[in-house]
Length: 329
Picture 1 (cartoon, rainbow, N blue to C red):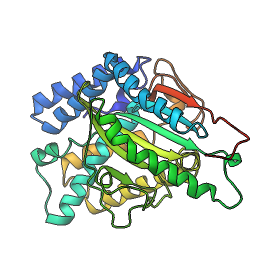
Picture 2: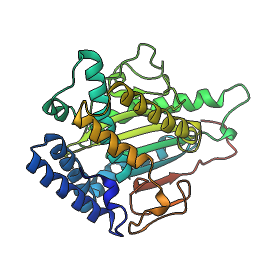
Picture 3: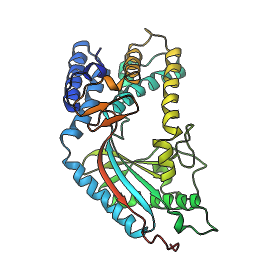
Picture 4: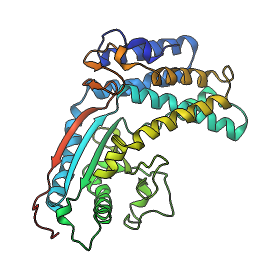
């Protein structure tokens, strides 16, 4: 069995690691007639294509930049950032194997038997966030009167922006995807028209406290999916450097251990291999890795300019609030 860890000590570039890992998985899949490893190899090829052929990102970012310009004109009093990233290799690998664990566990729990390799393979087409953009807004206190609530105003603007986004991008070649996330307690600010497209973790936070609006689009020009996230600055801080970040990671590890307890080793080969790959990554000492352009003194101090552990940035836009002394909106 091949694992990503096998390639992280060679001094190669991320792209070369991806090419070698995907090729080895493919050859092994053909040799052993393993459809899961073949799907895994094809998943890595998607990442390779994004890294090798980035021309479409120029078109995509230009069209998303039009929404940035719309916001700059519509909300000159807001401070906001637009950031884009390609999911990091380690995060993508963790997510792929995590999906296998989740599917096998849930299937066994519901049916009392393990799914076939074909059934597992057919449920691995759920990766819609290899490319993702994030819009983070902040309303400076100087624009808030004594009678108003800063938090409530920021929520109002966040949902106002969210309600405009789908139609705006659809006019520019994107198609909003149904989220499958339905909540009767959705925010009063989210329109009925747009509710089916958003996963509203603002109104219904995750157990970690994580809050954000998520929406997925299919880019008909680039022929790929991309995810957009909308948050306030406080929500972003909680997710990136606050307790949601640490809590979410610990929760995920705890859930994976619980799945392992339910499905003993040797009962399902697909589960065993995915679990081993995932645990190896979670226990990885980043300081010992030798990947071109990557340096880590420990698992907290990381300089990642190659998209190995942190996503590769593709779109940094920043808009500073104007009229700092004017509370009129």
